Length: 207
Length: 221
Image (cartoon, rainbow over all chains, first blue to last red; front, side, top):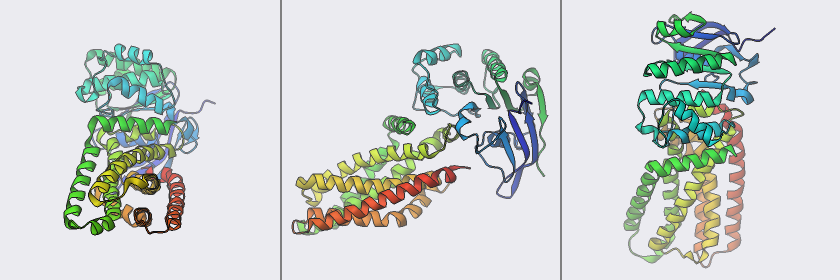
């Protein structure tokens, strides 16, 4: 039997006294693209962060690739998280950000590969990220994902700030990531979710 | 290896932004100026106060830099990316520690020259002063980098950092001041300096071991 890539088992998470996630359950099978939908504040981003093992739930458990969050420590490099907005060091150029990020993840790549990825997403070389627009940052995040080749890709509102060319590239990256693992994305855009996702999950506010 | 990559990247970021270094160097200049005026022109007074001024200025400026080491991640919202790297998370602490340690040594050497010029400290014993600087800066950096990481997600992190770090590094600062006093005093017994160095060495090893072991647990959200 093939293990689910993600298994969220009865997860509860609160910040202060406010419960954000209550008894959340979710299983993502290999090859799936799951879209988390729902209004602001329902906990989509929190759920993505719980799945990424960045925050620990008060109750419940997250299992990735059939292993507990603790056991996944050595394989954390297989998780790709694209936050909204994507996080990069402003004083470094796009290429420097990519090379540093991959070196720290113990997945160093050749400079030529980085240049090729930058060209593919249509980003100029040598410019500091501080001079990037929001859309360019999203494109840089796409380039990072292409190079990182995660087995679990988590995306928080990936379609925002992207033009039509960027969206096409995004769809391609998501499909490619799903073919080698699974993708979970949080979005408000039902049209985009309907176009790309193999399953839609509507989240409701925790009461 | 990854720790060095992180430390060198932080150094590159600091050299480009210069926010932390400029604040720390300005702070040091102001402290030295005020202390120099406060202790008056008498050479004996200044010479006695010099080691204390050196370590107090270095400790406060070091806290500014420790806070800066983690503020880089907060400003760029890149802490999550660091935490998603594979393996246990001690190396993140070691990387930040190396970054801070290198800055502290550069700043300490610069401060030593300034204090020597203003407070009549003899630089002829510079090898001994440098050993004290390395031992003292290591003890200080180990604790400051740990607590700066612990408080990185808090809004009041800068205030909390001073409150948490200073009680713990008091023995380090005291031992470093005593060792420096022993070195610059021509009639002092050098064996006493060595005993202060040993004490600093013990602090460094104990604090470093504890901080490396505890860090993965405290950095989790």
